[in-house]
Length: 458
Image (cartoon, rainbow, N blue to C red; front, top):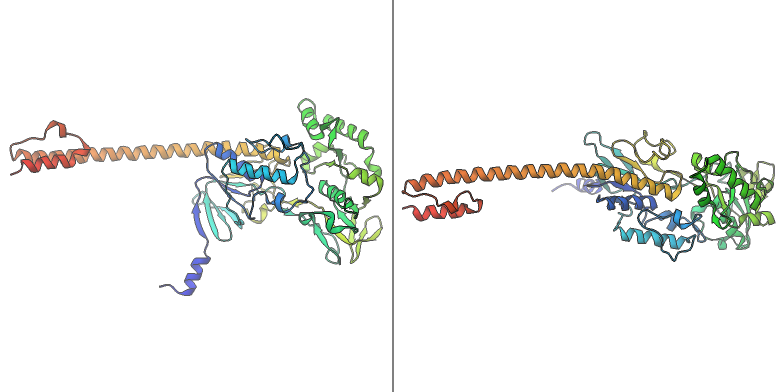
């Protein structure tokens, strides 16, 4: 019987399981898309998810009024569209219900509460060793699907720990009802910052929006059509620079000169900037009119957070009841993936789109294209086809090996039968008899042959 210490070490030691198909890290839209495409190719997979649900970013880290910024046809996962009765811009709840239906359709059952602590290629076996808090998984393939938005990005601002009031990231913001009648500083003017400011106004709060850098603001729709859809359609026929110029011309005509509002436009066009840096243009859903009316006040960048508020780079200073950081998210891949060849220190593939989906030795990435769900879907299809080709090769080899083994078994049977016949003939001849033809060379006749021998023996 082992000691108590040995028993404790046994229970603390991670248990190990070999996975026939690929391991997918992350049960967000990208991970679900990869699993569905693999399933369609006949390849099984296992999704490891650190939370207790699929699409945890959408379910646990988004505000209540969130809707898709793009029309639903640009946000579909592979192999299954949105229900026809969904609106053009589905709500948060509708998008979550769509993903749950998607997982059900393709029989995707992630292993929840499995936070990957490390993933490393075993050089001896050529398999990936993926360790969670209480288990270890081995597979020929690993698909990184944790995405660009795995962890909240908290900026380094002087004095950020001094503020006496509530200071939160938008990942925990749900509704402006908690900030009613407050003076709130919103740091960051992307889509989240704009929508949070809009939501605060609807709950009688007074948002002050910090614009640290230049930003493109576009109308969500132009001439009744999605701005994004127009850009995609035009880019099929025109150079990207011309498409950007057209979008900016229409935006200036419909929204006016945003520079006068403190929203300076970058020199690079909106789509070109998005493709190069991942910085998404703001698609206005009503915040701009409140900026024009003064209900949302635009502030310069924050120089320092004080106990009661903030000092700004233009010399202004103000007191605030609460501060909300709408500063986005970052990848967490460098914290657990022990590979620095494919991913950068920022946790993004070093190879740009459209070739950033495949690394070396069974390493893949989905959802890191800076092109939203369309990019993730494109990656998922490519990854599934690539792994399926390898899977079929392995299956063919296994089948050939099985056939070879079966041939050896049949050969062994024939040898055994021949040996039996030889022994039986020898015994029968001593009795002046022979084996009947109907018992010759039949594997199932072992007992029949020897039964006959026994009846003829004296």
